[in-house]
Amino acid sequence: MGGGGGGPGKTPGVYLGWWGNFGSLPQKGVTDYALSANRQKPLAGAAHNAVFNTWRRFRGSALYVIPPFVAYYFIMDWAEKRNHFLNSKEGRALYGNAEE
Image (spheres, rainbow, N blue to C red):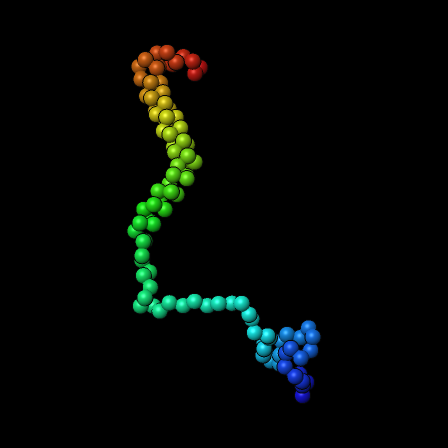
């Protein structure tokens, strides 16, 4: 019934066999290495790498983050001082009639 005949590799260009039998030629040149679970050290150097990797990442992004924060701080400081001055007696005396 709808026979597939021989397996894969018998006909040029046919790589799939009957009903999912992939059966292609074995792959060559692949090497697997394994280490038993009780011989591994999963946290070896984790603390050292965490400190130095964090410092490296901070150093790499500091110039993108720090200047906008410094600019924002100085602008807000100036704006607050200006607001206090304009709402003081001296500020009202100087600029009180300028709004009309």
